[in-house]
Image (cartoon, rainbow, N blue to C red; front, side, top):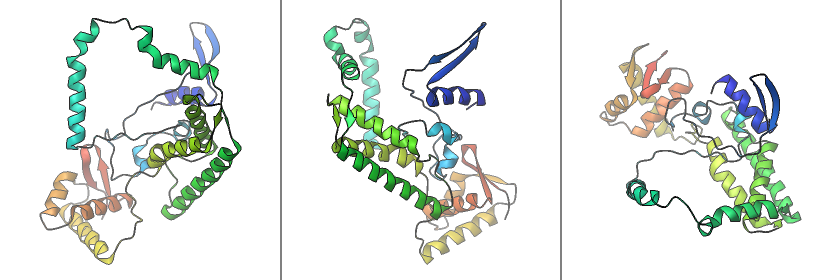
Length: 284
């Protein structure tokens, strides 16, 4: 993201204002809309062999402004691919029929009108029980993230701060509005925390964690894979990651251990992973 774009989006999401200086007009406008943003990782594809910090090349000051952060991966699964293909085919096959009836009646826009009614007429507040649960769960999340940072020695890619607490509160209020309820209950807090954990928390903790328990046999396999990688590549040479993994698996090495060896060597600075998954040996 370009520095000037970072400044613009940071002002809109932090101060809820947009500064305009163009054609002799200088003014500040209020930003009264939600921000829906999509971005590709620096390598063009989300890499499970990298930590979350390597996949998110954005400042934490910007990431922390989003209420929900989802990681969308293109995982090759037969049933999922079949559903996606069927949906795309139906969209194109029904496009011509839909173009003939552009005008939508008021009955067909009931969802839009319902959302407008909820936003204008319903202004919920948190109940005392919901406040107590929210406070307790937020403290627990902060403690878990602090413990993880102490164990890994790295800060989370998405920091959990008071802004995330405000995001969970907004989710609570939105869930209550959907039910036209003027009070956000404990059930709303539970659902808001579930949404927060399966998206933002999962994104913050994504990537392979090398600090899991490794048995002596696993450590030996990883060491053998590292030795083979060093033997096959000289300093400055590069090779496709897929070719390297295929070569070592043909030597009866476990693919997961080879990938973990590449990850460990990358984190030690011994190899460098570039675009299109090419590996360059930096030092031995």
